[in-house]
Length: 123
Image 1 (tube, rainbow, N blue to C red):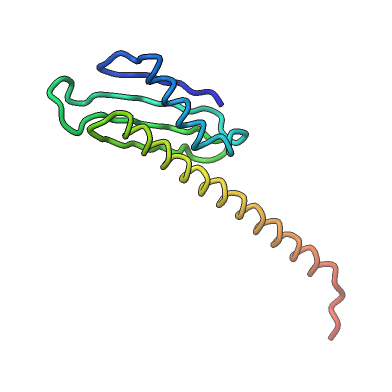
Image 2 (cartoon, rainbow, N blue to C red):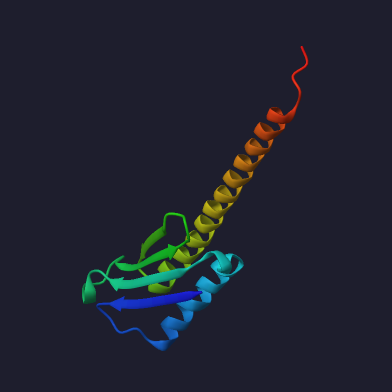
């Protein structure tokens, strides 16, 4: 799983980088083979003025599916990372499950169509 982490308006420390990787690992490791790339953007919107302005933007790139984009803003950057990573994990899981289910349904429909074509019509 390739993870690209960038910080805007503040320095990205090794501790913060490690926290992001660990949280994304917990949230997305079960779906690792389905993920092409993850982009994480951390920002402090108001700078030194304070407030609920620490933002974590996560973009998960999936093959043959639309990207999953999650953004969370909190007072504490670590809380924003935790919530965004959890939401990204749940959303990626739902999107992959829907994609799998659609594939199964279309294959079932194809099998029914083929079966109906080959059955003799007795009237």
